[in-house]
Image (tube, rainbow, N blue to C red; front, side, top):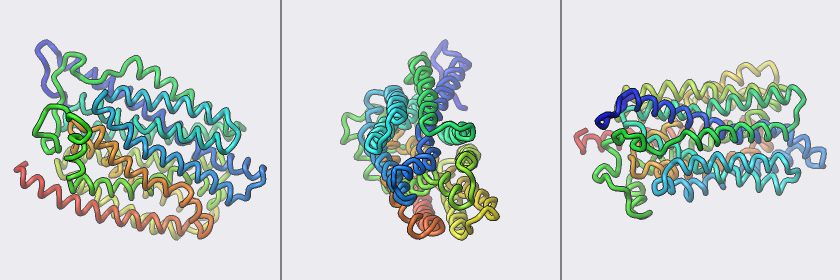
Length: 441
């Protein structure tokens, strides 16, 4: 990692150690948040069975759980617009701690409840408070790392949620296999995130200047490059972002890609259980292939984008999303039955590898590219918030399509979203080349 300039008397080793500590705390904390998201997905077959014992049909139970998921995504989107920009004014550390603390409190509430209204309230509170966490992580990163390492650094931090998701699904699958019920999954997730909240409270610092080092260097093409002073208010914070055609294209990319990602995150255990006949524990464990393949992709494209320079991220997105579209089309034709299970799992891994790496740029490296140090949190919040407005479709709407027309129809619809995203990524390439030429970078 590049360390930038150092103040007199501030050794390079000290800065590197501070960066590594910051990276480790942010990674662990955000990975833990995904224990408090994967729990609902993993528990869905168990909760559907319990709702079935209360008189709901299988389809009605899935739609009820899908509605809870959609309300949660809507709350998360709202939080992205309302909470994330606060990090640009009061600091990223507070936002990060809010996300971890809220996830713990509301996950325990979910575990203690037993009725759909309380399930819904707890899930909304969980997702709403978590909404500020990623923007806090981005803000802290902008204060600790130079822009020349943003691709690799945000790539590493982006796999935190993939690693957390994969570990959570594996470990929760093991708990189910040993006979534990859905409540145990939520208590387990709450304990994990509580531990990382304490660690972040003790060891996370807002900026490298707090430890005597020179400020980090921002991307010279960021929309706030002409000034080094923080925006005076919300209008000054938002105006440059909302007037940028490239920024608006990234928002469209976030919308379309989040629909796909959230659908896979929410319904993979149920899909593998229904389509391939796996038992609930095995389906939960196998669903970890999606975040695991995505983690490999994120690390690969993060490193590659720094080597390709200012235009690398957009070029990688075009290629990855085009291949992901083809993989989704193939997946829409996978037949039901155990004999096709291996093909289904391989298709899932392919979609993850070509989608999640490019996706990780949107609310991470792209947000830093647009917002610099002054508006990185607001940039990340808007990009992610618009994305999660699309993610609402991954709940009840996705459940309705799967219940009425089958899983193949759902994956065909996702292929259409992915194709639109690939076209937008191509347009972003063109705008990036023009911007660089006009600024002679």
